[in-house]
Image 1 (cartoon, rainbow, N blue to C red):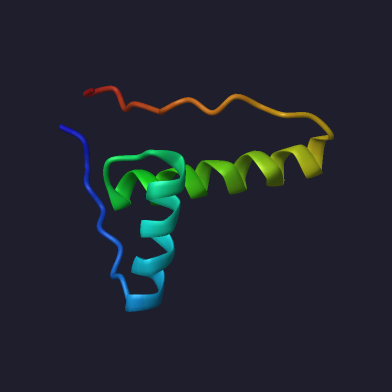
Image 2: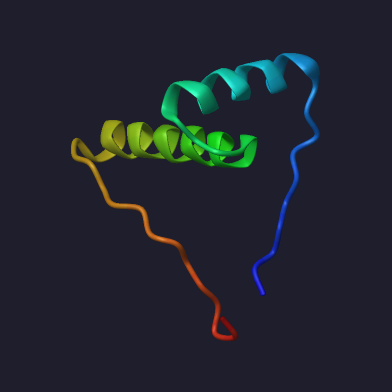
Length: 63
């Protein structure tokens, strides 16, 4: 069973996530938050290593 985490959203963050959701054609604000997180991780990794890296979901032994 996957763990679910919820962000405590203030109005400004909610507005920004909604804009990303619409721009990227996503269904939920959670997807928008995940998209932004992955984008930031990719950019950070590329700046550290000089190249892009694929991101994969990590599953525990019980998954």
